[in-house]
Image (cartoon, rainbow, N blue to C red; front, side, top):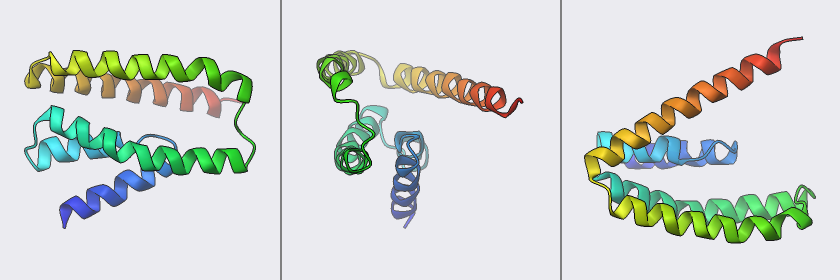
Length: 120
């Protein structure tokens, strides 16, 4: 049941453009005692259909800058491969700590950007 709830929350957050991994990875690794690498792998598999759905929606709404897409694709693929290799070579506990620090930094960044937008 809790896996279903985590999946639904991840889907909702993904649809908002935040990234379902912010819910899915901690839920799998904390509440279901799954190794960090396995949780991140599941998140990457989960990302493929949600990214495809988002891409279709953005193309339909004409929100894709076609000139910007081509240079981003190779950089994204290279980043994914390099990140995967780093994750595979990193201890699970260290990987958890790194992911936690990343989440804290991103949370602080989002709060800062939100506060800056609210100012007149």
